[in-house]
Length: 409
Image (cartoon, rainbow, N blue to C red):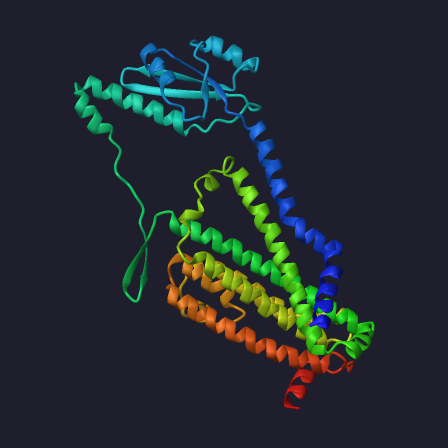
């Protein structure tokens, strides 16, 4: 146990001082800070525009001035004529003005704005103008107040998300699927990012020691099995540390951005489907650890540090393909996607997305998790044996040939 802890601490101490690891550790913080700075600058530069409203119909103008703006613009009520509005616009006192002209039943409007002024989202202004025009036409037709209320009452509209499992409808809350997908995509991206980073780290760790022949000294005092599990445990500790830093940065970012980004303002963790968090945690742990133990095995099979990227390329390619396939799984529940969601090395990206969109039941998810767990135990046993046999092997034969020959032995 003491030797195991020594190897674990050595792996943590060596990598935690690495500039590459420190950069990756605080990369989410840098991203959050950059987005926060961008949002701050955007909010300062894209301020609410100030406009004026003029018209040859005083009643229509007054009604339009008093209409709700929903924060899309501010109206300078003191400006009532087009001549004054044009003068204020030329002196950059306002960002634009709307001139409304009525001619019998015809209503036309022109919005004039400065090219260097704050831009206007004109939807609210157009809706207010159209509503007032309809009210004016309704009054001219002699409609009562009750009839006007019925005329302008909005239609009832809501969205229901449903998924079919074995012909049975499973309904989700209208905002639940969106929340599930956001969390699933964030976690699958983190899984892919961690796979790409930590497979390289642990393989480089082993290949460096082997290439410099330090491994021969280590093996004389610490068994290869102890080294293997010590390195994997050290990497797991580094992963946990990075997950904590990333999680804290993400929570702080959400607290800030929900006031600046409309989508996040409507997002709440209470919208996430029950069981989604435990599913994502299970796939994150199993997926990252499965790739990590295989990378440790591949690192022991190379003879030089320069060969690491070549040895890891099939593994990282599979991880990338699984991540890309997760986007296809959003709109497809084909046979290949369904099969892939049960296959280790692929399921960590496919099954969470299938579950998020309602294409997989929770029972199917846990079957896939069980298969991934069994695969992790089996591959850890195989990787440990291969590591033990290859860690002092400096032959130049092809890796696959070495592996098959040692397995037959």
